[in-house]
Structures are given as C-alpha cells and as structure tokens.
Length: 146
Image (spheres, helix red, strand yellow):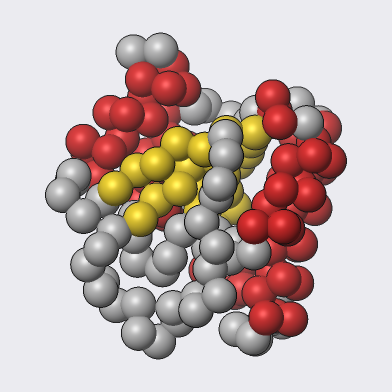
C-alpha cells in the first residue's frame, strides 16, 4: 500500500507521515525535503516540482512492487500527475491524504501557487484546528480500523 500525504507546505504532511511510518514496521518514508537533499533538483519551478514528484513516484512504485508499504509526504501540486500515478499503480493500492490548513505557517517562501487539491478519492485532514495527534487519530481509524 502507498499512503500519499499531499498539500501546501507546513500543513503537517511530514509530521503525520512520520507518525504513520513509526506505526507500520518495515514501511519506507519518502519526504519531499529529504528527496531534494538526495538529488540535484533544487528547482521549485513547475519543471522542478514535476521532476521531484516523478522521482518520488518512481521510488514509491518500485518499493510497492517489492511488497513494501510506502509513505510519501510531498506537496505534489499537480492533480494530473497524482491522478496518473493512481491509474498506474491502481487506485486500490494508494490512499491519498489531503492535509491542509488556513493558517499561513511559513508558506510564503515555498508556497505552491498552482496547487490543485484532490477532487475525488482522498481523505481530508484539516490541521488548522486539530493537533497532529488528533489528525493522526483519523489516520489510525482509516489505516488500522481503530
């Protein structure tokens, strides 16, 4: 299974993904910031963002085919790229979490202006009011049936 956390910067994607990664032994976590540190792509233009998401998708697809649970926390601003990936791996193999907040939270520098929120088959997590723990309770319910 692939659990994909998408949304604007500083909404809580990485925090929630790390909690899930801790709860699923043997899972593999791909984070956008970590990915940029490992690659030469420091470009935040449309081209750079597409390349970064494509790299994450290739790694996630490879690990998923090897039987690993993959957790991705990445802005992934372009809905067509996310939808194409869902089609490639099969919608039953991915759970998309749209993490958002109405608070600014350090977004000014890296805000993805062209971000398009999911339109179908996703779980919305509003971190404006809920703490990471409260938001994670929703994830536990969905992932583990708790």
